[in-house]
Every structure is written in C-alpha cells, then in structure tokens.
Length: 94
Image 1: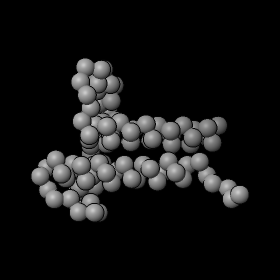
Image 2: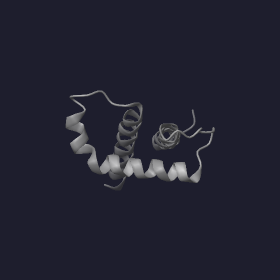
Image 3: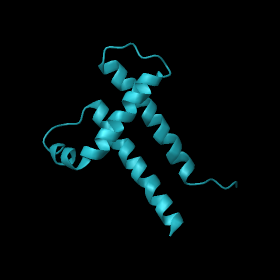
C-alpha cells in the first residue's frame, strides 16, 4: 500500500470548497456561473472566506438562532477544514 499524506485529501477538499464558494457567490450575484470560476469570482470567495474567519466567533452564536444559508454552510465547512490543516501543520512542527 502506498503512503498517502493525510494533508492531501484535506488540501483537495479545501480547494473544492473554495471553488464551490466562488460559484455560490456568483449565483447569488445573479451571474450565470460556468464550470470554472473567474478570477473575480475567486477573489470574492477569498474575501468571503477571510470575512468568515474574522467574524466566526460572532456568527457562531447567531447560528444557534437561525439556519445557515448554503453559502454559510460552505464557509463553515471550509473553516473547519482549514483548522484541521493548521492543526496538522502545528503537530508536524512540534
């Protein structure tokens, strides 16, 4: 059996989620998203990911009172994957 780095599937999933976030934002803007997001759509996804990361603690409490939108669900999953990736990096450095 070949060695598989435990980070590889997480990094792939992170990119899949980034792609899905970009397409979801494009759809919410009324754009007709194609199979591959544009540079502007990826920039919007990166901005949304960054905003979610910064505001996560405030949003966390609010999620108890209302359901998450599809975009928020993707952002929360992306954040969880990124946390796992950082934990693995931290363990490897220690």
